[in-house]
Length: 371
Image 1: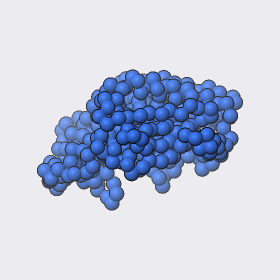
Image 2 (image 1 turned 45 degrees about the vertical axis):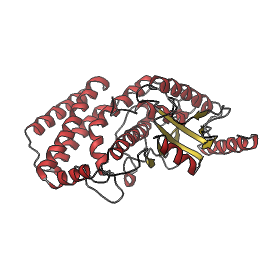
Image 3 (image 1 turned 30 degrees about the vertical axis):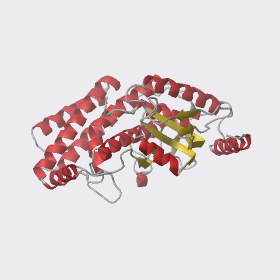
Image 4 (image 1 turned 90 degrees about the vertical axis):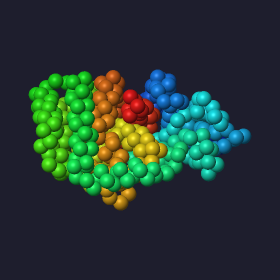
């Protein structure tokens, strides 16, 4: 990148930081560097899980272009001063990533890049600052397997088959919920009630008490409400709050629901919920890539209702894995001491993550389906 281009990127980055409630000049780059180093350690740790793993880009000025037949990748800038990470991948290279995730970043890529990654069977995922997948290019494209799509249709149309599929997914979800409660949630009276609700729900599912999808979802929702209540009050460790105060509610895990009801839980009002949004999105992208590459129709739900633009089948398949994501998030939260500059509290009350922190969260919560 030429010096003039670098200066423009840093100027844009400085404006963003300046607009983000006048973040402390020293704290933001220091924390960004800390999370950058943590991401590097996590990426190395998880490198061998699935071929070359995933390359996660964030910040301003990221770029992907073809140079001499190879893919030249430049990561974005998240703080100043910062050395730009540059990667080069060759056709058929053993170190090529299995997927590239563009995480809340700005920059550019060319049409040639899309052709190159398709030939190299590399997935491309773009996730915005809310933790939503806004673009996904699978290495195989979407080529429906008529037998699998027909299975989806027939299973949804047959009430007995639909219930059998759905009960199986929710049963596994509740079982994983119990595991997360046992391993990662502190034992309180709310914890006892959550365990009682989970085992009670399993008993009802085993006895086939829910007669239809509505009753099944109601039973699952009751268990989920008790489960998330067991999280409430768990302490979150902080540093630097005398320099930059935080809302009192941020000192412990709160309710899962967002105060911004119109947008569901996507516009998080609490740091833990913002982290969960990214974690669930990492899971969603994994499941969607699997489903599309195996020839399923991601929009044709079995348990969840299909609506225009929705990925109902992905929501179906995600259910058993959600508590596994929760466990990784809870363990991650216990393992770190946060700083106020790890998050940006916007003027409308919505919480955003430091992009380098978001990269760590996505790295920690990837590859659950193969775990």
